[in-house]
Length: 452
Image 1 (cartoon, rainbow, N blue to C red):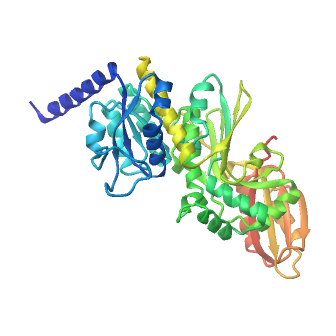
Image 2: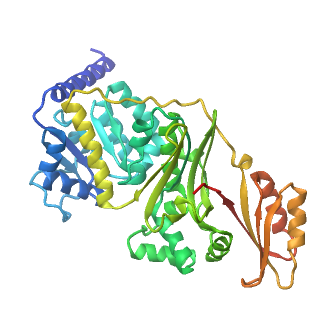
Image 3: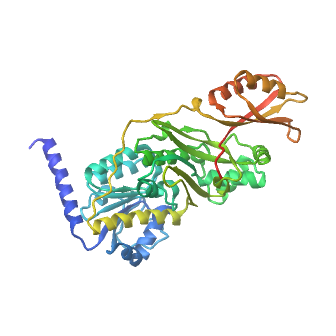
């Protein structure tokens, strides 16, 4: 028999074995990949509270094995002898395993393990935002072809449900906008800056000390974590593949404590906002710090909390708010996904399958964005820069809404807000202003005038 034919026959045999084990069973067998912070939390729930999970499903859940890198490492949860192993393929391909839970984190080898499990006809639960953000459409389309589920509620809001509401509860709605505070680390940092006048570096150090930030918080501070999450939400809301690399992304490194003082006087606070808005076949998707009205719901989301506001045509605006990180909230979402898959297996319900299209929507370039802007211009000693700034902005069609000269800063400065205008015009004005004598510094933040 030719090699290719042998390989195809082997794949079909593996799938038949998996289907036979899933069609009639006395328990739900799972394989757990990873025993870090979240994996330990999931193992604790499955091993120490089996009766609660079994009551929710109708059958007990049996952990067949847990993939780890170091068998000798001390564990916070007591694990039965022989349950830990270092062979991912053996655990994933075990014909008795119906659900693979991937909690390794990172892109490689997690993506390969997920794809291998789906190819073998296994259901998958993951909390991996990196993999789902980058390869979610590929994984979901493969799962649809295999008739299995891939669930990833914990990938965006940890314990705060948002994926299931978007894909199930709001299925009859046209989603018009998603706006969120989706990174707990940056939200904590900005909260410290707002409440205590801390500068960015000081606030990041405090977040590290409290365990809210990694030793290297680059993915949080530069906005890429939030970009992955808004890409996942947009993909699920509109069924079109949105790669995180396509999201306009700007982190919080330029935000200063002084900006919070000025924003407060204007009636705003500052959040790292993840936004996705749809206009017909055009999608505006971006991550950047923004002035948010102090009366808006998102403005009140402080510390490590997350929140997502979803605008729909039928249900109006819905607001999802909760803990966006941590072992227990994330474990809650992971086990919740497992329970839903297990219920479908027990009740012989077909998997809820989604095909993600690769095209059909265009992205709005950031240069075409139209919004309001906050500008803070520092002046060299004795310079009167307000008339000059007004002239530069006026020549480019940027209309000033408010202008206040302030001397309590160092150096003196002018704080401007604009009427709604095009990003490209503002950027051109900023380039000119930065080259003028008398202008010591230029700060720009976008304003999102959200309804309360």
